[in-house]
Image 1 (tube, rainbow, N blue to C red):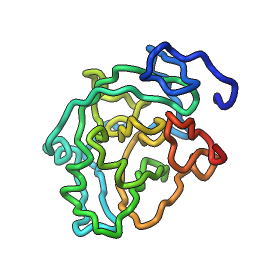
Image 2: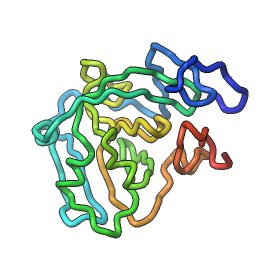
Image 3: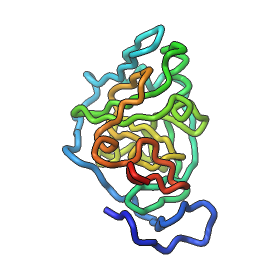
Length: 198
């Protein structure tokens, strides 16, 4: 992974410091790649500091309002991919269903095999945040999070959890796997918040 030596950046104000623009879509993860033969038993659970705990099937998720959103993404390891087009459910739709309590200050994203990542609720509900099932007109591949991943493009891309299975609204900021292993608790690419001591 890249941390440290400056890298040449593209001549654009769309690229944070020390990032390289790529036209490929690198696959970075730790652990297994879930591979669903069908989605009959797949669910997305929403719980925690909410008024209405909710469990959605994939069909129910697809019946929620959808949107298409274009953005740039930036990986903590030093690559940026510009002009992505995602299709999915706006995160505000999940907030509408679950009705978080005033005590909900953070969102913990739960992925397959117990992986989590954390972010403030204000970041989760931004207009640019969504739960995506499609990238650049194609269904997500297993390597990139099929059937559903978060897309939180204003933070480093590890916050955009792949293989999403749960959304927990919390009154405390619970570090996830990468945050417990040295990554920054927030991860703003424009401030280069890569590591916990940045």
